[in-house]
Image (cartoon, rainbow, N blue to C red):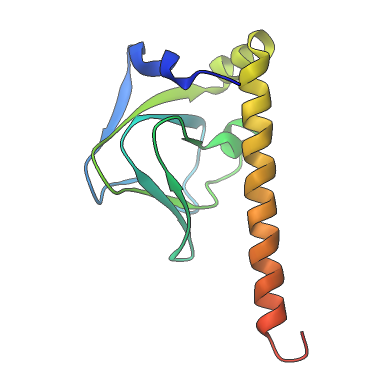
Length: 128
């Protein structure tokens, strides 16, 4: 497992106040953010899909494939986030196996959660 508290001493942080948006669906993205302090919510199409807190991270898909943001992230409390660009992300993957495993597990969990929501939605439709 990877110890995200190592990011507490980063030189540059992004800080958000409650209600402030980190990024919105469709925004271009090239950074992964690690939550050092605070809580936020991920939403898609206005529907809340995940709660974030210290040690959580968002933006991994944009760093991996350069795609636009697929969700909106909104601060619930004051947040302090470390910024990870592609170069640093690749370094962390190469040099820190625990970080790589943590990212892979998070992506897998988010995919499973999305699949379960999709199945539940399909099951609720007539003829589903």
